[in-house]
Length: 276
Length: 308
Image (cartoon, rainbow over all chains, first blue to last red; front, side):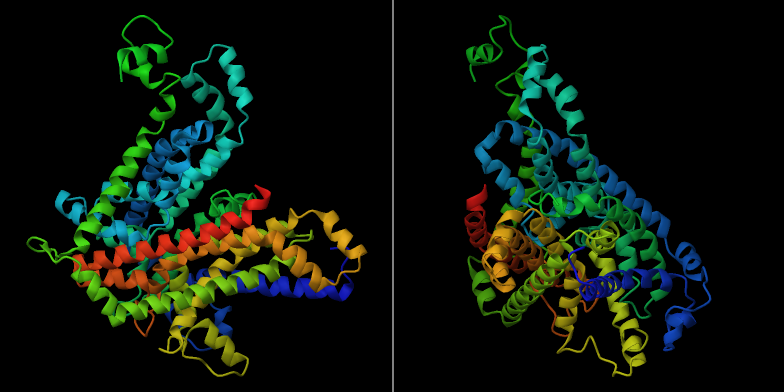
């Protein structure tokens, strides 16, 4: 920064501010719209974009006319339980891959490749199977799909974190007479805790945001909140107000996480290949 | 496995070992840890793959029994005009999005790779769209691009410019590209920021001393050293872009000439309930993804070759 000339500095901040405006503007817009009355939403007066009389009308309608909290709770349940299942599968597997290279990389590659599969490939057979087994529109059905959906990613991200744990610590524990299980539980897991936390948060967010499976596999009982919000658009009358209010609530946790996890976002999205 | 093998695995305890002891023995523990994963892969990967393949050779509409039709579905696919168009459109979206994201990423990456005050705030804000649900963001942009009340057109007319029909047939696909690029350019930007910050400084100083121009340094030093990261961006983004779905659902619902690969599979299987033909399309798009990724992985490994 110090090497830039004054006009260079000016240009730097000009570009930075414009870029941030383009990124943050639309997100702010959701929150503005959420507090607008119908009249202020459907106006062509530019000043009303920012200056208007805030109202809670949209939130009231969202809570009274639609099963918002119910669907919100479904999202919470499905995300939380599937994330726990993913961890139960991925933590041991990633440790095995990182410590012994079990399967000489082939099994690890197969695991990653499930993430490359188009979601519809799994959707068709599972739809048929769920229809027969009565799992359509159930929490369990969606939880199982999300477990599949997140396992490959979680395994690979955790693999990177386990790889960073020095083997010498395990040898030291072995000398002290620890069994394999003790080493895993008392030495490796505590050291891998930051990695497990990051992975957990990513799995939660991905299940939270997932749309295609939720849309195909749930109708009413297990419908997630994203599917509810999507239903406000496309019917005869578009419900912009409740849509914005719902979106404002649903994205709030993700915004918090995005802010506090910024160090890890790139690492997570690149499967750990870029440490950021 | 023989009794003897188990005994030796346990270091010869001299009694019949329990299942737990076998599972946690030095020899088998690494496989025990993988049992849940192998179950998940078998149930959730092999099963659907097998069934998708099975249906793809059948005519099946959710009623009655599947009728075996051989490779008919595949033959139909190669002559299916709307499918081929969707394929072409997907390729177009892929190229437009990956190239623009890379160029914006390179530009902003160079800009933000130096240390500057307020870095944390800039990074925190710029990364926000990456974790917000794509569906919600596309609904948001759908509203922002509305002709009368959309914020974009209102700002345009406030600036004295003409309003634009953002969802007109000749423009809708590009509008969707814009939404996708908007959400994802911070990804390539910050991957490249990480890359630029890890470059060895002395090489650049040496080049400066030798009087190399900025452009020369960029083309001959910066770009080659960034190539592994550029490959990572290209591979991952291609993988995700092939199955673009949420932005279509949130905006045009496949109308006005925006039907892409995954959308047409969804429509065939879940709107027209043609499970057999839908499966054929799904298998085709899977093969396409694998082929594309295999080619790119080759380049990726070559690019990574030097420094791993």
